[in-house]
Every structure is written in C-alpha cells, then in structure tokens.
Amino acid sequence: MLRYAARRICLALVILLTVMIAMYAMVFLIPGDPASLALGPRATPELKALLVQRMGLDQPILTQIWLFLRNAAMGDLGYDVWSQRPVLELILEFFPKTLVLGITTLLWALVLGILLGAAAVVWRGTLTDRLLGLLSVSFISIPSFVIAIYLILVFAVWLRWLPAIGAGNPGDPLSQIRALVLPAFALGIGWVGYLARLVRASLLEVMGETYIRTARAFGLSERRVVFRYALRVAIIPTIALLAVGLGSILSSAVFVEAVFSRPGIGTLMTGAVSNRNYPVVMGCVLFMTAFYLFVVTAADLLIARLDPRVRDAFRR
Amino acid sequence: MPSDAEIAPAEPARQGRERRAAGRVLHRSSLRVLLRDPMGALGLILVVTFVGMAVFAPWLAPYDPLKLDVMNKFQPPSWAHPAGTDQLGRDLLSRIIYGARTALSIALTSVGLAGIGGLILGMIAGYGPRWLDGILVLIFDSVSSLPMIMLALAVITIIGPGTDTLILVVVTVSIPAYARLIRAQTLGMAQSDFIVAERAMGASGARILIRHLLPNVVGPLVILLSMDVPIVIMLEAGLSYLNLGVRPPTPSWGNILYDGYTSLRSAPHMVLIAGLPLVLSTLGFTFLGEGLRDALDPKLVKGGA
Image 1: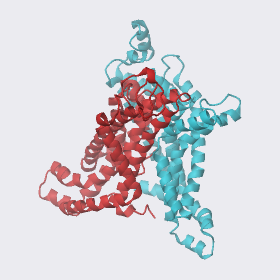
Image 2: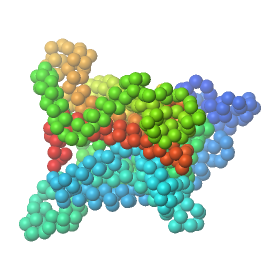
Image 3: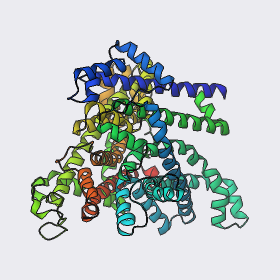
Image 4: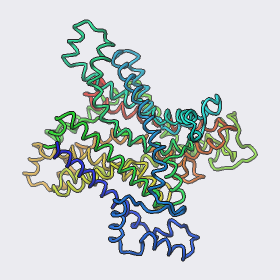
C-alpha cells in the first residue's frame, strides 16, 4: 500500500511539474514579451521596465523557470498586474465560492442520478427505461450555459421566483441559497444524466450476481432488491468517479458563473483573460490543476485502501 | 465531462485483408442498424440538416447575416424575418444559418486535426521504442489533467482570442485521448501473427504502420471523434459567448446567444431561438455517436444489458 501511495503521489507531482514548465514555456514561445502583453500597447517604457524587473523577466529563462517553480512551491504565484494583489490571495478569496457551487452541484446530481439510474433498472426494458436513457443522453449533451440562460429567462425574468445574477447578499444565508439554485441546476444537469447511465450500467452488472438471485428467491420485491442490496455494491464505481466529477464541474463552472455573474474562480479568470492579466490566469490554471490532481490522487488512494485489487493491478 | 465512449479495444485481426473485407460488409449492415435505431436515425437527420445548413448557407439564408437595419431592430418573428431580428436589425435566421458554418467548420477542422495527430502520436507510442513511449505517455497524462476550459483560457490570454486559438486548444487537449486509444490498439496488434509475419518478411516499420496497422485502428477512433464534436461546438459557443472565441461580427451561435442575453428582458425571442441550434446540434451529434457505437460494436447493442 505504501509503495502504491508513493508511486501515485510521485506521478501526480511529476504531472504537475510538467504542466507548470509547459505553461511557463508557453509564455515565452510566442512573439512579443510578456510585459507588453500584459500592459497592452499603450504602456510607457518605464512602466514596462518596472514590470519586467518585478516579475524577474530580465533573468535568463532557466533562472526564471527555477524562480517560478520555487515561488509556486512556497505558495507565491506572483502578483495581479493591475491591482498588485498577490494572486494566491485572490484565488483564496474566490475559490471557496466556486467550491460551494461545485459541491452543491455534485451532491444533488449524485442523489438524482442514482435514483434515476436505479429506477431505470427497476423498470428495465420498459418504456420508462428507454425514456430515462434518452433523457440522460440529452442532459449530457446540452451545453450547461444554454440551460443556464433558459433558466434565467423562465425562473428569473418570467416567473421572478429566483435571482438572475449574483451570489446573494453577504450574511444572508437564505438569499445565498436562493442564488445557488439556478447555477447548481444548470451545472449539474449534465452530471445527472452521466451518473444515471453509470449507475444503470453498474447495477445491471451486479444484478447478475448470485446473492441477488438469493434475495429474489426469498421473495423480496424487485424494488427492494435493487435499492437495498444491489445499489450498495453498484455504487462503488460511481463514488470513484466523483473526484473526477468535482474537477470537471469546477472547470465548467467558468461558463455558468459568467452567465449568472456569480463571483468565483471562473469570473476571476474570464475577467483576467479579457485584460490579458496573465499572472492571474496562470495562477488560477495552476491552482485548479493542482487541486484536481490532489482530489483525484486522494480518491485513488482511498479506493486502493478499500479495494486491494486496484493496487495489485497497478503493481503489475 | 469525460467522454463516455466505452469502446472495447478491437480484437487483433488475424488477416488484414480478411478484416477489411469483413469491414465492408459490416459497413452496409451498420447503416441499416443505425437507421433502425430511432435515436441514431434522429441523430443522423439532425447532423445532415446542420451540415446542409453550413454548406449551403449562402443559398439558404434569406438575408446577408451582417447587413444592418437599425430601423427594424428587436423584431419578433414574422413572415419577413422568421426568427426575428437582433439589436442591430440583422436577420437572426440568417445569422443562425451562417453560425452553423462557423460552429461546424471549427468543430470538424479541430477534431479532424486532433484525430490525425492522435493517430500519428499513438502509433509512434505504441510501435516505437519503449523510452519514447514513456515520454509520450507522461505528456499525454499531463495534458489530459488540464481541463480543456482552463487550457483554453490560458492560451487565449497569451495569443489572443480567435478561430485559430480555438482550433489550437481543441487539438492540443484532444490529442491525448485519441493517442491513448490508438496506442492501446497498436500495442495489442503489434504482437499479432500477421504483423509478426510481415516483419519476418522484411517489411519496413513505416510499411507495417501505414499498410497494416492503420486500417485496423481507425474504426474506434471515428466513433470517439463523432462523440467529441458536440464538446467542441459547446466550447466554441461558450467562449464566443464570453467574447473570447470567434470575433464579432462573424455570426457564431455563442455571439448570438450573448446578444440575446444582453436584451433578455426586451427581446426574449433572441435567446430562445439562439439556444435552439446549440441544443439540437449537440443532441444530433451525440445521438449519432451513440448510434454509431451501437451499430459498429454489436457487443454493446443492448447498452450493456
């Protein structure tokens, strides 16, 4: 187990390092220097020189990469070109908001996805099953920001039930929850479809096991067999996928946050991209990649802890 | 969202020619299977419709998509303008038809290029020296741990928004998945008898790769590619919505949607109509991809049941 964990963590670190070097190299591969890129065409030479010096752009490239890696390892991701605030401070301010949205999304999608997947198995082969299958595929393929805009039109503009933009008033939990409903719905609906399909497939596999036959032989109802006995086992691959799910939801939150003008990493990044404020963009990308790798690696380790077959497969 | 094309690696073919002949027979019956499946048939119809819109846009569009007519702005749908007009009086139907051109040309170009890149790199990784395989796999892993949207934003910051940037991003992000599929297929096939026999007869590495491995690994790649088209359409529209993709005034479904969003209260018909092509085209390509997978892989016809 220890060897497996060490290898898994090393792999994650190597990947992170490769990503960091690649990102940094990318800035230098393009024509024009990063300072004028960030400051725009109207910057004065003095301003540019100051930025060049601040960001260490006058050093040789290898030194720069080394400095960048060293600083990033110590939590220093550089400074916002415009507000001069440390990038890490910005990220730590905005990330929790995105994380709240991501976790809410994942939770409701998980509950509904499991229910729909199990329902499809209880009524398998019937019209309900086919309809659920069709719905799942549709949910997966429709872009979340289109759903977001339709939701705003219906629930905020026409019905006026929920706010169209923002994240609610600070210190007012009810308004914050109300502001969370539509974004979480738009972001999660695709995962409902995805999880429903996954749960259905793994349930069907489990339904062939002998202990299910035994349960049936005892005369238990089909619904009870599915929900009480099969689901418990069938849910494991789904749980394994949640880490990847969280990572993917957090990154697609970019569009949904933009549509709802909701403060978060997504809005921070899109604002920074428009301003070509690249230290902020790079910092966010690095942070999100590191977070994603961390969650996925942690989940893998947890599963290996629970299921020895996984770490044996890795050893071979 | 991870693409869930659960494609079983094809069994190593014993005889290249035999397999190719079998492939041709399979092809005709596959189309029949695809058309018998209502979902696959619907997908095919939608995709053909959108491709037709894109190809014949100049003949189909009732107006010039860029022509301003400020006197008639925010018109609701009418006989003169079946989908209404936007904030500058441009005909929405024409913009949507030309938008299909933008969306599909970007999606098909980038997915096609990524497919070719993945094919080449995957075959190199699978058939080349071990050390090269190791390096390539590490690069694939690193790139695929970057979410597509994150990488897109990073690249746009550096080289600026535009069609080329979009294509570059999609190609970069998609290659690893394709390359990994091809690598697995190549690895599985490199040890099969007909390749070993070919090598024994003194065929060069290039000949083996192009004449014998290539035709056998392409099939599953096509399914994966068709399933990725909606993801690219979504990315293009999303970035254009954020004004980080296709530059206005070029009609793009994302731009149209953004214009509609800014006048959500005064002209709700704009978002309602602008969202439809996005919904229908992504559904179409997904249905087609699913249908193709079922048709080409009889093992999965029953959806795992």
